[in-house]
Image 1 (spheres, rainbow, N blue to C red):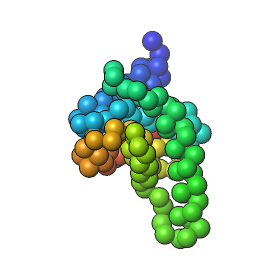
Image 2: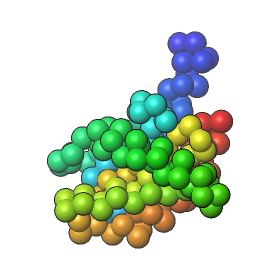
Image 3: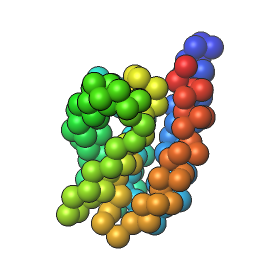
Length: 132
């Protein structure tokens, strides 16, 4: 295996482990994804009993994040850092990872979203360092 392949595999394993820590560490979570601004998943992790496709959740709500970023820029309120979308069956939290990536985690309606948001916030520096 080439050194570049080893480095890529190591990064993917780190992303997967970070997502696993967030999802498995939060009661009621469904899954998570690190995604680029174009909607391509860098890595995903879902619970075995997940009823939603976390890639689809990331892509669809990622479009909304783009609009939120533009609105924040237009209003001169600073860079958007987090977005939460609550529906009847799912709560999705999206944290930006610079201007080109984001972390999205989907939670069930009875999940401990506060803990999930905390774990997401703690993971951002590690994910940003790996993506740069």
